[in-house]
Length: 164
Image: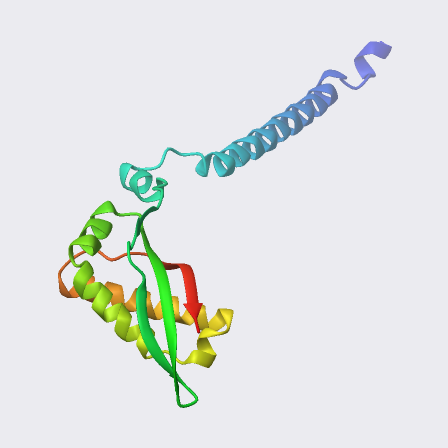
């Protein structure tokens, strides 16, 4: 008769078993969500770019056009006339811009002579002054090209520069 008075063992084991199953499911769900979240964040940067993005990010090498003759003029310095000579090259990624620059080269050279001639001798003696001259020349070349409805260039390069 002792068996009749004993408490049932099975319901207590069922409660513990349910608790273990719930914890395992919750743990697996947390791990799964963590893995999915990580893959989503890492995979977001690896998506294939749209065709527009590919065209924008594609590397296009620069091309250059050297001006055959130097830009030569005189500049004023402390009441004296000085001589300035610059061999130049034009840089662009768009070949059409360089073709346009060659087409309008007489006008561009004329404007570049004016820019060089209006420079100060003391300023051209420093690297910063020569950099400013190249920037002013770039603005001048692009202004001429824009007036003619042509694409612009990216840089004017001083290949050889002399002031005396």
